Length: 376
View (cartoon, rainbow, N blue to C red):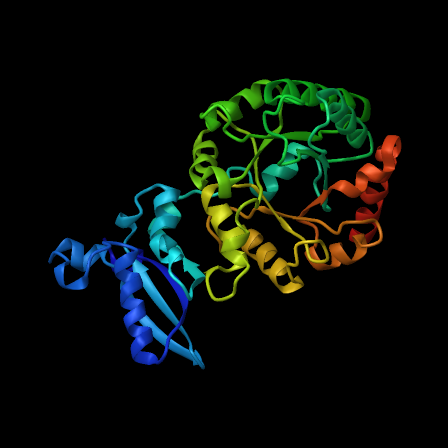
């Protein structure tokens, strides 16, 4: 394997001094690859190629240091699960280690295609060539299939681009997966026929049957225009399997449920841009949902912008994907949100829409008009 083919991960460490930092870096390089003490690493291919190589250790001030470690693409193969395992598998269980950077290198870029649709493909499927996309979320859990289909229908009449299942809609008795997928898909198609639009319904796939990929194909057969997946619960491998399958041919939206502990503590975990931008894109997601600034989850404007930047970075792996901030969305904030995120974004509209009741179409239309006006 050529030297330049290696991929590089940047870690921020807490350490007592530079000597301790270097020792911690050595520990990470071994832990993330061979998981044995350095003095018993077999000579040859394993020691020369597989073991992580420490390229630098830099003092940041105080007890903070950064180290860049390079890894052989052979250690990852072609599986996103194993690639993430090398990036931050066992070390994620240790204290005071945080992943703050990732450079895939040419070999990983070749092996991992990223999003199948990306920004351009999602726009083509929804028929929205410019401006932010509007995505109401049908909820709440406990609603009947008929009620959810009715909400979706009215939202499409109001100008929605994507109807998204709430991530709490799984296979409960109140609205079973297959029945919901069929009914809401039919409602969206009926509303599209009236408006002449191309709104898409993204069905939440949870793997209740034990076969998440099969469920995604069932959603497609039911008429869905995309799927919602929760890689923090299901694993990134499901995202990759569907993105790589040309016969699936539907956009994928990923939801952040269960991933909070990775990003919320600054001393450990993974930077926001990596978790919700780089890693989702790496797996093959086309739209990445994350908590918006000003909502109830406490992400800062800087963190949200870093996520959106990683989703749309032209130098990122594969084609750019759509960031999808949710929470704190309103007509009054539309101008600020457009100024902050720009045009290539999917705006999630959640519980606040339900206050409109039977006039939910008017509420969606008001948001559509506000986003369009702010976009010029």
